[in-house]
Amino acid sequence: MPKNSSLGFIICVTGAAAAFGLVWHIWWMVGIAMLATAGAMIWHGFVRDYERIIPAEEVRQDYMRWLKLVHAAHPVSRDHETEHDNAGLADLHDILEAAE
Image 1 (cartoon, helix red, strand yellow):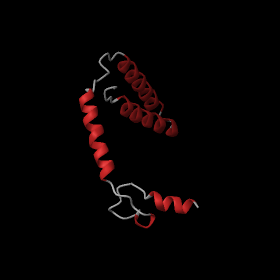
Image 2: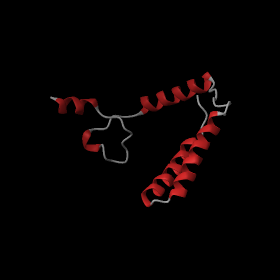
Image 3: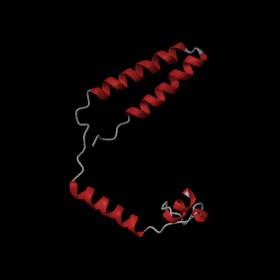
Image 4: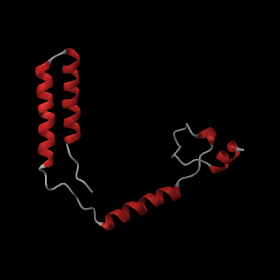
């Protein structure tokens, strides 16, 4: 899997600064923001250690934990969907009745 990166946040901030500068005609801000964006993208291009390995055992444990949660969930009727106890599992009987 790819490692977490700050590139998205940097592009977000510099893009917002560039947009602000373009709207208000602050050309020096636009120039600095564009240079910072290009610099961040070039800097990120030189990163060689960009992957992380998740062990298969960890993936299996997370999957088994998720399956236990799914099997433990109880269906919720349409009338009770907005209540706090709703875990996101719809009652198929209500859905089939509504479709008819």
